[in-house]
Length: 328
Image (tube, rainbow, N blue to C red; front, side, top):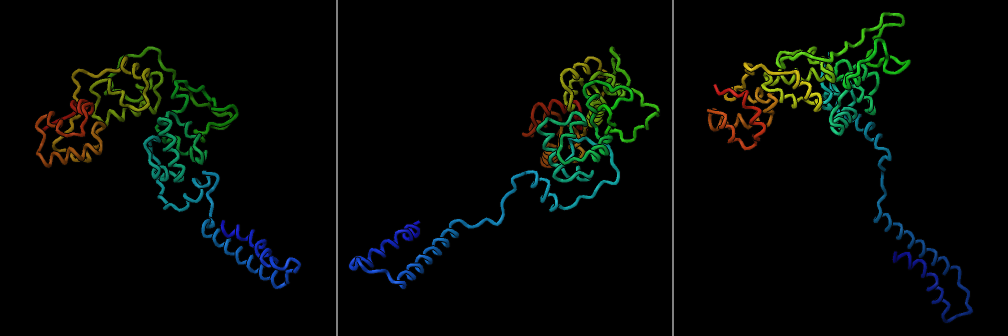
């Protein structure tokens, strides 16, 4: 800034000095050239100072986040081998890498997980259509293996026989529909208005799906939790199944029961490995490691109360574990 001010005031000052004693004198051509050279040097000095103070930027960030998200970053990541055979999976439990193994781009897989967390989990397959970058053809290929119901099943509205999701459009989740004129697929079986009581530990998915609001995905999650636990000891445990709201829990508790003489599969707390312990829904990875470390340091647990010495074991988890513990 000081150099700029000097550049502006210097010609006037020099001119006044040259003409102070000779008011009638005309400025010579050499003086003019000298002043021009001096002004040029000052200008170059000012430009150098600006470059030093404000270095030039070699690149600028993109105005559109999607270009960064689905552009360069996806091309720099190491490729992930694809699965040779697709099997059933829960979209709410997959990591970004596991989505990649099923053919989904890395950035799209992360977006699926982030969107699911914000939405509180996916409740039906059609929600995945909102994911930017997930191609419809790929979604149609993966949909039959997802342990999620359709929107109609999730809300207890069976589809009509032969009806398509959108008028004039084929069902995107059934690419191998019969040709025109062929026999239509049978409609969903109508659910009974009144159900008979059933045992929660012996009921299969077909029995569970008789309840209004219970589709294939929810029925499968109930059976999956039952198998991991080693059996239900109380209908209240159904609250640990993801995706069951209060009305569905009330219906299950109304018709489902646990036999009085039922004994769940025991959890051998003194002999099970950390890997075996962590598979139990009420233990998990962190608690399993602490239990094994405590057992190796202090010896086997003699009774259930000994587990209370583990500080990270909360009382709610302790109460849930009690019916499954075995100390042999």
